[in-house]
Amino acid sequence: MTRQHSQALRATIFVGENDTWHHKPLFSEIVHRAHASGLAGASVFRGVEGYGASSLIHTTRLLSLSEDLPVAVVIVDRAERVRAFLPQLDELIGEGLVILEHVEAVRYTKEEK
Image 1: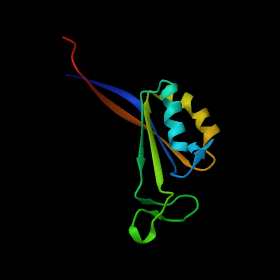
Image 2: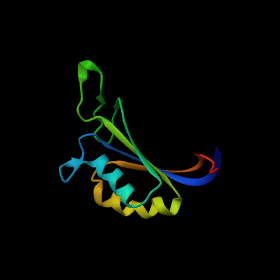
Image 3: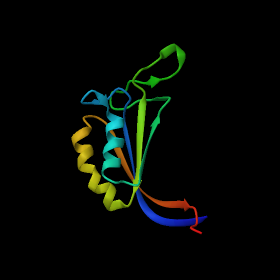
Image 4: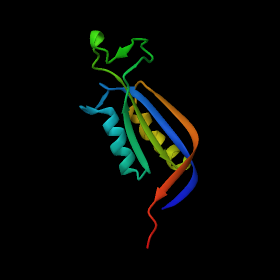
């Protein structure tokens, strides 16, 4: 197994679970566009509780079931590739938040024999 270290940029995109783009979940559209753009990886994480610009708290707790939970889409790649993807987010996101963080990525791969 080999291990490679590199500098990367992580974009975390916070949207609502019910946010859509052309009748499709917005988070799914972001992931598919990231894939089509050749970005190294993207994952979606569903929040169990949170609030955003509306100040309404959304939660999975039984007494206050919410269908619009917070969702975070995380994309990691080289900084220039992530920044080149930002105009697509401009088109997609009507309301939300994007956080950009410089990170060190450690990639593990199987050694070729």
